[in-house]
Length: 353
Length: 277
Image 1 (cartoon, chains in turn cyan, orange):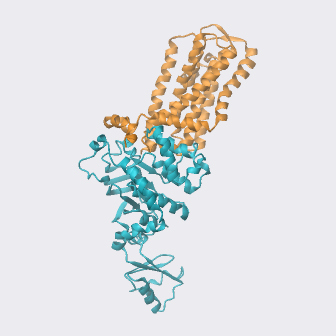
Image 2 (image 1 turned 90 degrees about the vertical axis):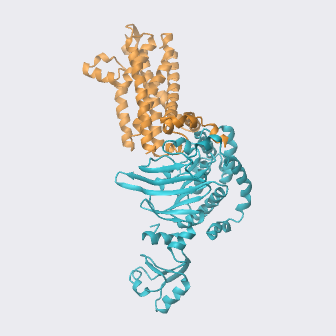
Image 3 (image 1 turned 135 degrees about the vertical axis):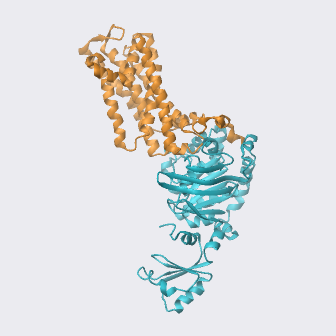
């Protein structure tokens, strides 16, 4: 667990010191609920739990998009929904935001049901949808201010807040640009900045880095770490295992609307996969038939169209066994197990196809 | 934190109310957005919407009017042909302004800009969005009506002080069309379907007693036209322009009041179905 959490900070060594001041500011302004808010909190709910889903189900006609899922998210956690396209992740997010009505089950967001208290629940949510829906008729800074007005926030608060968020999203010099003129990564950062205009306690991120180049993804991840450190609860869906491993304290693996497994990335890997994986490529013709010859090596064998995966505690040792049998793979790679392997194990399919 | 909840008078209100998830009393934010967007956008389109009826008035009223001469106005008095068709064109102008904003603009925002999707992920409810957008359409209708009424004044077509009331009456007409237009647009998925709106509007513009009295039609067609909204607008403005009222005036106004009510119900219901499904 620790390893996974620390990994990101090696990538962004300078990030932490800058944060402290920012965090303190946000904490003091967000973590003292007004009396009216605390009185609304459901007494059955652990005060630390901000999202509680029970037997949540959503069907569209014959299709069951979300099938009886239950989970709790404590305040400040970074919680992930990992699964392939069509697993029901976005639908779950929509139900949390109260913009999709559930078919059955219960959902409690900070003591409120989003279905009957949509505007109130959303007042405390920040939403980053899968596709950017920035207001192209407005300029960059106007986007933030107008969005804040939708929450009924006064301009005296929004003007300095918009500048602060532009700084945070590294878009200060683009404040008066047209949205059209921004790159994909910049648009994404603006969408995230926009979602923070109401100082949300929960931030919903639907596939936050899909379609971005690696550099843009890393910048975005850095921004998300900062938010997480400042105490914002992050709920994110992704079908990128590296993203899930980097950003999530805990996640559920979803497939076909069902929860397949739940836990921290490290625990899930420990439970459902070996320590290391040996990846072998024998060429697309032989991959399928070579399995028989590899029997007995490692703990488990997985044959994919383009490669063979051998799950073993010690990958190098497994590779030696392979070569000692006289087999000559075209390429071989020893790596640590990832969530991709967990998903493959649980569903028999790859995450990204 | 207080700054976050400060603006939400809806918080307390919504708790016990059935409209809680529909309305947060913040339509002004939607209006503000529209005004900010208008700053940088389609002035040309707006101006063209104003000139269209003016051009019709010049061509038909002044041009054809010179061979038509005078016609019988609502009170029975003789008025110039231009004065006869000017209020009708004003009604058309109010309709066009409202329809442009509530159909094409809304269609684009709904299907391409994903604007409403973004709005409904905030504290706004569908009713806030509907009221805000309709208000913007009315504002445009008001601008057109004021401009056109000024043109009528300059051309000497206003014969009564009552005529000043054509401006609020035009807003009422715009309200009727805007509230319905947005609801109907929500059913449209393609540009081809959007063309049906024009297919409906053009004949309504031409045949709603705009250029000649309803009495030229056979009875059955008269009934049909009297069921259409524009005819009520044309007649209402025509009566006001000469200051001649009858019990029918109340029917015309009532028609629009009902249209507005039904239109808002339709639009809000549709927005809820589309975005809060």
